[in-house]
Length: 122
Image (cartoon, rainbow, N blue to C red; front, top):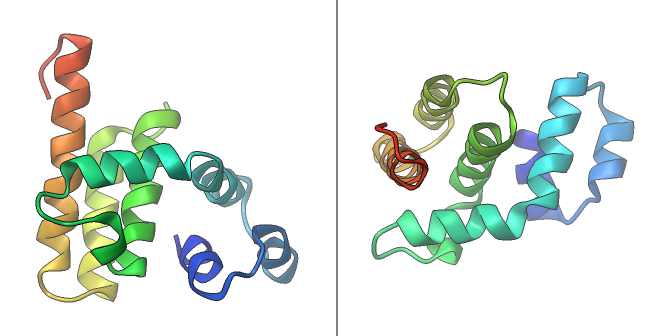
């Protein structure tokens, strides 16, 4: 999540960030996976962020949302609830007081829509 944030804010290529830091394979998958699917993730965030464009969302919250959505959509080893809980906790620690509810609301709405499109309940 922080590497994605740093990449977006500074423009430093992900490959360069990876070379400077020691990341687990899981963290590398998240970084490069989020980057590869950024357009889709941003579209989902924009569709579910009521009255907010993706550009109005603070870079750190965007990074948190993108990472959690990537886990939800592409990591079968991460339960949806865990991805959401971790995102909300990150927002509590590193963002403003309204960010956790905002992050939870967007992620919850995406999961509900995915469940209904699959014919299940969230």
